[in-house]
Image 1 (spheres, rainbow, N blue to C red):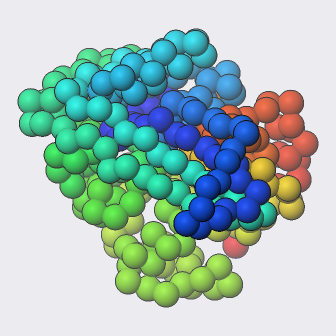
Image 2: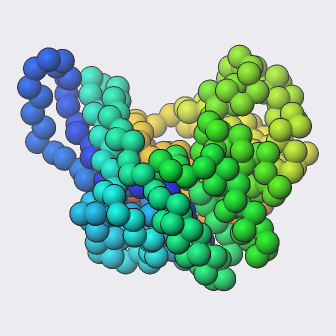
Image 3: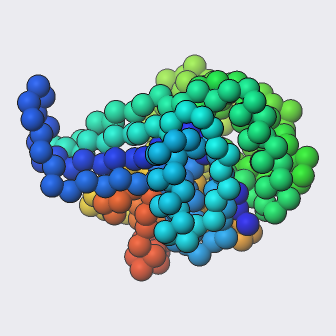
Length: 312
């Protein structure tokens, strides 16, 4: 079973608007409201791939109950820790031929006692987990090294972690006593970590950057490059994945779908090439759907066959 962790979930609201008008009224005819936060997007895609998955994290209030109800309706197992403050909303405005404007609430403040309660829940859930994914930002009140603490706890139980976060939480996890098995930074996040100015036209320099001591002990580094694919390091091997062109409908959650595909493949002990191709495929499949954190498996094999993964 894959255990997904979302420490700052949300109700994700998507508003498709043909032309965004500032300082004016914008009317929408179709609205999508989804149990969200990066980890819950991961959860749904693993479920849609047919994987065994359980969602945990912290939720509170009316919106927290909505998240649990949506997962129940989808037949997805969950075991959240309840907190006193309300779960947040995250709003995405999809407008003007592919542009995306996001309005993200900061979310609730988690108290120390609530943090300790969640950790106790997490420790119990580890007994049934084969792999962990941790995704997204930390709720207020949680220390920067909180993910590092979870990774250490999981490793002590013999369970590996796939981590998708950024900023201080990522830095602390990379400095932790135990490393995540996989991280999925984008190019901006790599540059932030290493204080570099790399771009996608410099694959050899990026390859060299991934040997930085900060990444020592991390088995997989998947650097996503949007429509240009990804550069991947697995132990001492390097790969470049190139993607076919697709007509993007909704890019929100595609990175989360990528993590879901990677987790599914890793849990099934797939080869390097198959693992990379599975992650890239699920990311693209999400971008083809209007609903965030959703894929259509009927299109999986067609896209999978068009992805090229080459060692370099």
